[in-house]
Length: 512
Image 1 (cartoon, rainbow, N blue to C red):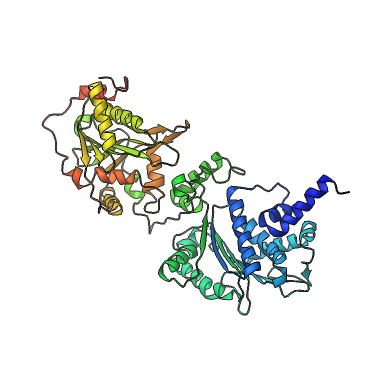
Image 2 (cartoon, rainbow, N blue to C red; image 1 turned 90 degrees about the horizontal axis):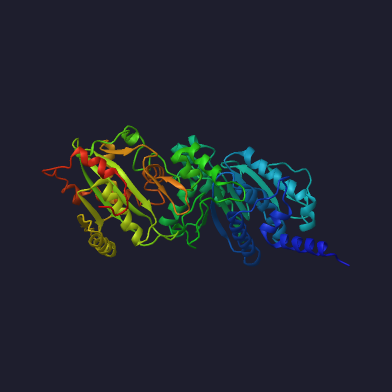
């Protein structure tokens, strides 16, 4: 009589023979429990399908897998996948080539794969797979089969060897290597001329997985080659950034932290603070940016942080609104900039609203900003803004609180990239000044406080054009563009210094 426990164990064992995730769970080799995240499930599911395609149809699959460091990619691809592939594809007697930036790294993965094959759990799953003779970390074979596993660093000797499974795990060792163009060139040549030519006839799988350092790395060049040559192998890309906005996801699903099963939000925050924006963009957000590709430089704003803003009567103050139509989690952000043009010809970023808002909240926010700063005019990005302007005029009449609204006519042929690039001159000439961190804060609907200026610098300024969003840079470019700049004339009269205190007071949203 089979007990329920025995029956469940048999179901798990059978699942492990067909599916990589149950196999990873069944043969897990570490003393601490396996933590399974959304990326773990997705990667294992895609690899299982690729293995099935090879076994059943002889189909070749090319995959790119990108995710942050210490999120288990090597456990899946370089430790568990080779033993699973040997067992699941035993009838085809496949060969495997494992590669990465260094022989010692890859041989370590190979040794762990051997340990898995020798484990009691593996013997229950794939009893026919045993290691033949005296195995080394660099090469080992399967008893009674033509299957052989080769482990070598990228650029190592693999002449005469072939693989039905080829894995390349972390081809770049560190930032120094990533920034070296000769080293990147060498890596690429080794990949395309040596490793890619080793794929056996009859189908298989090529997996390139990495925590990326540079946009001109092997993955970057693979994507570039696919764009330029339709005959280049079609790699499918699986990307799992540490933080993903819903509108960046094909499924509409986003996340604030990728792997809550292992790391909490504080761990991610500390990693970002430690890495800085450049490295965090690459190593956490899978969006590498380098000094060669970033449009804006850190040194341009290093000395343009004001500790005390100029007096109100020494500036002409303008506001610009780029509204979005919803406050849903997956909607765009509304951005409102308040900018002062000083007598010195410099622009001072005085205030900013950056949040997801509905129509009523946007109206209240702009009226609040106007009461605080008394801008000469409020410029509104004309496309899609008519409902906002109409609502503000309605509230103005209702509350008897009026101010000029100017719609900015942006042509349909206007290029956003070109607009933003026009900011380079102003930043490089140190003509745009920023408030200190902590001066402009916003509270999200979940109650978490955000430093708006820090978000602007870290998430957009330092990483554009590879930033995920540009919804603060683009409105800033609008308000400082030619249409507005031509109207920045000094008025004949200005408010007195006594008015400044009243303007900064906050005595009710619509107080008059």
